Image (tube, rainbow, N blue to C red; front, side):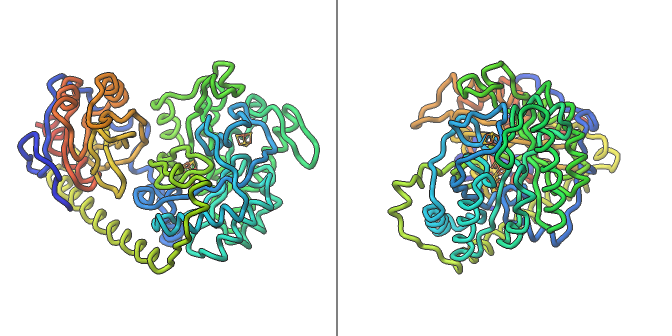
Length: 497
Ligand code: CLF
Ligand code: SF4
């Protein structure tokens, strides 16, 4: 791996990374089992499934470090009302509330796809996720897919829907070779659904209350079973709404698993009065990161749980953690020439594969070092700690602390390094100057972590992080390897001496 790019702030440890210890007492790690999750809970994926998801940034956690997606906003209408949605904004089932995307025709969308595929060759997936429901706009949605499939067959097609019209279109989805479909399923009990959906518009009639919810539920389950039958990979999104469907989520998880869903993405409700939604105006809060993790952990083990969702915009562009949509607004991309080159894109994919293999090797070497140095019972009984990682992608600790707009959070014990989510922060270093108030906010956001892993951390934030009880680890290396080596040298050794 590339060596650290900048001067060191402390003597290298045996791992070669530079570690500054905290000056205040640290948060204790939790004992295994405390959070209800364990690496043994990981669900195995067959080789053939791996091949289908390996370059889809949402379906594969490791792919999201390398591959980008493009959303095209071609579907304005919707056929249901969710209490967390304001129709002035994008569909909140797969998007960040309060965001408005620029509507495109299928022809404009196809042009955009070809432009972006040339400029961002690691863009592997074209998704349609709004701004309304894609299947309430079937002609625009399917025309877009047709145009892109004809001109850029190496782009995977992906669709996200509330599921109401899904049973009508599974054949067409299959015929177009759309291999990834998301259904948002927030309940499997209509009595709970009544608190989420005030009405459903189905076959030219509006159904209010439980009558509408029953139709929606029945159509979602039917659609899910049909996708399974058609061998189309299905992800289920569920918006976690405290006090409404949080305790119900394991039942949702069980129902979708039994019907063949591949992946469950339990996302937090984002609710604010300024979004003008029913929930926002009535004080319904979203879950805290701890509440979200607890529910995700409860459902893990039964099926794969997605934890890297960024609730992106209906016109999102780029890696999941970045948003390059402003580089490709309609006034810009319509004037950009198409430079789609299938060979160049294939070469980029091969290069990513090689990088992934090198990362896996590095990760395994770090894990082996620990396994060899610790007794088996130590590995089984080690505390779990959280670490916050600054990364620009590529699976590496490779970003300066001050430039991070989010930290990826990993949970580490002696046996595993597991990604559990991301936390958004304001970037500390703006135009070369650090903002004290911003730093305080960042430290509060990651206060439950034991360490920050970053390519470089300046002297001021280092001091404050130390005071807050965090180790500061400077490295330019594979995330899991840095986390593993930090844990081995600074957590295991203090716990088991
Ligand atoms: Fe887009 Fe959705 Fe396809 Fe991904 S997003 S249509 S499955 S290509 Fe991904 Fe964005 Fe989360 Fe959606 S991070 S909101 S899960
Ligand atoms: Fe809004 Fe999406 Fe729900 Fe339709 S399905 S009401 S667009 S959140």
